[in-house]
Amino acid sequence: MAQNLANQALEDDEPLFDAADVAIYLDDKLVKYFNGNDIATVDWTTDNVTLEIDAQGHGTAVKNHDGRGTITLHLNRASDTWQDIMGYGVSTGYHKIDISTPYEHVYSGKSLLTKNPGLNVGGGAQTVDAAFSCVNIALEPNKK
Image (cartoon, rainbow, N blue to C red; front, side, top):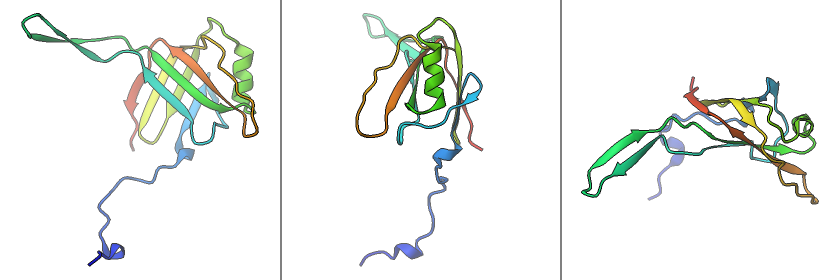
């Protein structure tokens, strides 16, 4: 016999995610108009800890202090942010990126646009993925 789902107790206390609760700032200016469902991607370059194993199988854990990574903003090309980024051009000037979600806070105070992103022109919304190379990306909890 099938369970009556209407009578089941709510077992999951995970809140309803709302993308409107995500705020991204580039150089203290609010970023708006993204690429469909994608807003941003954060990737770190190295592991926080690596294992070194000797010839006899003895291991040592080594903590890395390399917080480099890439933050990619997935933008609609009609956005003011994309216009600003084109104005920066590929340069050695640092930018601040601050991302706040209901779950985490991500921040980089030294981010470089190291190359122009590729562009696709088509019949749908025109989008661009602007990737910033970051000297250090900080991650901290933000759950309220």
